[in-house]
Length: 145
Image (cartoon, rainbow, N blue to C red; front, top):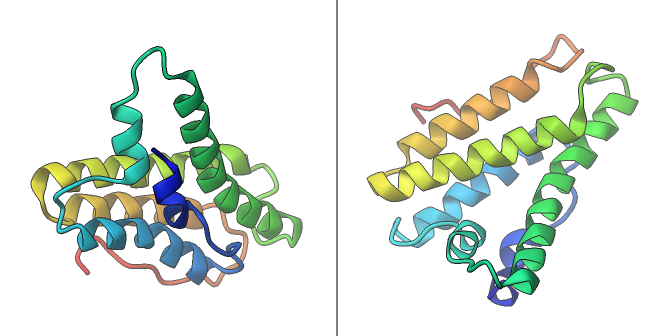
């Protein structure tokens, strides 16, 4: 089930705020490429899980952990460089960003339009940016772009 979607979760590490933005919006770009006729491969697979499918559940858990991990590692690097609030919980922030993205994708799938996902991703990015310690805040897409 998940093996056909490895490209969806694979990719290089995130090295900048711009790359983080591209990464989160790439999930929406994938859904756009499906013309909003199907959802995120991971979310779709997760919703179809049956209670006895523990192996599939574990593989999906690994995929989601990978998605969160990419974001958490970037945030952790930023924190070590003093560019993210020392009190920020990078794992929780990463989980929030991925959950917001996935939730936005579900809404956009139902609406067959990208507005909800764009708003969710923009909101997640805004929240992540609020934890930055530098005065320069990277621009990010807004819900209206």
